[in-house]
Every structure is written in C-alpha cells, then in structure tokens.
Length: 153
Image (cartoon, rainbow, N blue to C red; front, side, top):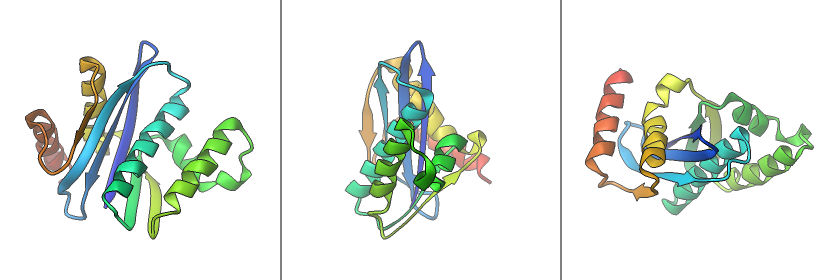
C-alpha cells in the first residue's frame, strides 16, 4: 500500500491530505483536514504524516510505503537517531509509530507526483472542512483521482 501525504499553509492556517492506494493505484481511502495555529511547516508535514500512519493502521495494513514531497521530513526520518532538537524528538515518536508496521518505508516523491493530496489539502483549506473517506468517495475527489491517474502514465 502507498500512503501519500501533503500539507499546505495559508494565512497561519493549514490543511493536510492523505490518500491510500494499493499496488495497482486503486484508491482505498483518504482524508483531508483543516487546522489553525501553524506551529512550523515541518510540524505541519509531520501532522499530515501522523494522519496517514493512523489511517494505514486503521486499515490493518502490514506493508506500507509513505510518500511525501517534504524532503526535510523524509531526511529527518531516515537519520532520526542523530537529531536532538524538538523536531527530532517528534521524529523519534513518529519513527516508533512507523516501526509498528511489519514493513514500512518513507520515500520522497516530487510535488508533481503528489497532486491528489495537494488538491485535497487545498480543498480542505478553501472549504474549512475535514473529510474522511474509504472506497466510496465524493465526486470531486473522484475527479482528482481520475486526472491524477492520467498524469501517472
């Protein structure tokens, strides 16, 4: 399973998005949310990752690839033993959550390969809403998935 995560920031508020796909690209679920009080961009991306981890755990997946376009978070997660900052402490907590999966990996992907979750973030921000879905998802999310599937080819 692949779990794509992203976050966007605007006017000290932020939105996050998560989309879960199987190995064939079929969407199994996802979520988007809107929150205030921006702590820092990295902490916002971590918040999105925690949402993705929680959603993947709720589906009882054993083998998961988490993908983010935030290179600093991916790098922090790969080198989490040497970071003694507050962010580093949070990264160690996140790494512990990821290690609960039988097999899990965190990868960096380019922003153009993360369009669906980017649009989910924006949708949550524009509508000031939270959204969670599984196999049956709203038509506007379906349109994003269809457009994204054409760009992945």
